[in-house]
Structure formats: structure tokens, C-alpha cells
Image (cartoon, rainbow, N blue to C red; front, top):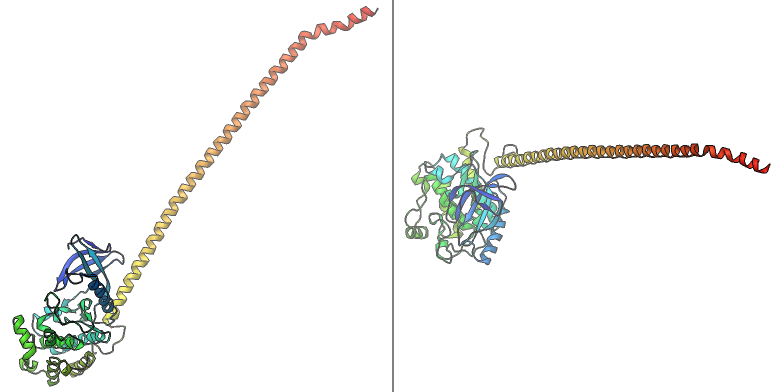
Length: 397
């Protein structure tokens, strides 16, 4: 792919802004809606067969229906044909922040901030799990921290619905990131929402301590995820609340049955742990209630709606101006045609009148000439006619 290329006759690629295991992410321009979006072009092999393509479409539609302030919005998906093979792509809202992984490169954030970021992530997973969607690649790189501080979980477009995925494709390519994968995914035991909870536990561990619970080669990670109990986060960062250690270690339980019941429970526990850490008068953020007037998600959607309305009004104004300009041109053309027709008509009438006058004058001249000829003949015949009566009288006598 390259800048300037247009997908599906609609999405013009502007610049590549990221890359991952499943494809490259581009900033693109939506020509139809006239807005900037993020387009993820999937790598070949993600959905090659018709069956894979149908499943991909179904899974993207499911992910696109997820509605949560901390889940990136999926706008569209499609297929782009290249000379070699078709490529699938996802169209998502364009985010203006940086991935959590970039923030963690500077070390773990203060605990209140870490919990304020963690709770919305758990809430997003809870919404997905209620819809039957398993993310299967929860990690810091798939969490965006926006410039206004809001959290967005991305890459739900490659999530799976159902529990038949063991984390490894038919070509032995691991689907996910080993440092954050639950042990059952390496053991051909499939996955479900509890696998996401384990991955979230790894993310939370790194958010609290600055490092994931396990590090090493792929084979070392497989062994550690399956056999090694991680150290409590509080041992690496003294002063963490004990209940936070309990929550993280519960999320990292080897047996899925020993993990928390669901992501809603995890989010609630995080909020309860975070509450005493907030300064007096601080308004809580994350999953707890806040008015629509200052909710960043609502404000972002409102700005988007306002922009669409403004563009629609501008388009209406442009069309109205174009209509008025076209109407003025048509009126001017009509006036010119009417003036030309009037001029031609008047010229024709004048020509007819001139022809009539000329004919009348000619007829008058001819009549005068005929009258003159008649008088001349009468004058010539006059003396003879005067003699005839006398002749008759003489004869009779």
C-alpha cells in the first residue's frame, strides 16, 4: 500500500501511522463523509477463503456494534483488490493520542492515574464479553490514551466470537502477543472471556510495576504462563494496596475457573480501590457516572455531529449558491433569447411593411400609368366621336 491509494473508491490513504501482527494502520480521508479516519489494512492470509471472509465480516459487524466510551468505533470494512490477491480492511475512528505502551516506556504512572486508566479498559471488556466478543489480544499497545485523558481499547475488529480459537492458526502462527496470553491458549484449550481477563491481568501488572509478569523467549513465556506463579505487584512496588495484589494475582490464575467472575466485577473492584486515593473534591472518572455535558466521549461525538452539521450546511449553501448562479445564467440567456426573438420579429414586421409599401407604391404607379393611357386613348379618339352624330343627321335629311 502507498499514500494516495484509494480503497473501495472511498478511502484515500494519507500516511501510515502504525503496524501490528495483523496489518498496517493508515490515516485516511473518507471522501464520502469528508472526515479523517483510521484504516487498518489486514495482512494477506487473515481472510483468504470465502469461509474466512464471511466469518471476518460477521465478526467485524459484531465488533462494530459494541457501544462503549472506551471502545474504538468501527465505521466500516471492505475488500480491496490488488494485482495478487484481495486484502480486507477496517475503517475506524481516528484517535489523537498515544498507545499505553508508549506511556509505559517512561515507567509506571502514579497509582491514581494507573487505576483511572485500568477501570475503563475493564469496562470496555465487560461490554464486549456481554456481546459474546473476546478481544484475544489485550495489551498496552492496543490501548490508546487520548489527548483529553480518555481511554480507548482498539483492535476489536480482529476479535473472535465464540470459544473455538486456541490462539494458533492452521499455519502455526500465534494469534495474540505471547507476553499477555493466557496459559490455556498455548495448551489447545480454546479461549473465552476469562482469557481476556488473564491478558488484562498482565496489562494491569505492567501498569502498576512497569514490566509484564513474565519476560523471555517464546518457549520461556509458554512455560512461565503455564507453571510459574508471578510475584505480587506490591513486591516490586511497595505501598500498593493489598487488595490490588489480590486482584492482580486472581486475574493471573492458571486455571480460568479461579479468575474473577467477569470484567464488570474487575472494574468495580478497581474503582473501589481507587476511591480512597483520590483527593478531596475530585470528581471520579472512568466507569462511574458523570454528566453528559463533560463526558469526553459525548463531547467528541457532539463535536463530530457539529462538524457534520456544519459541513451539511456548507454543502446546502454551496448548492443554493450554485443553483442561484445557474438560474441567473438561465435568466440571462432567456432574456437574450427573448430580446433576439423580439428583434428578429420586429425586423420581419418592418420588412413585411416595407414590402407592402413598395408593392402598394408599385400598384399605385401602375394604376396611374393605366389611367393615363386610357385618358390618352380617349383624347385621341375624341374628334372622331364628335363627328359621328352630325353625319347621321346629314344622311337623314
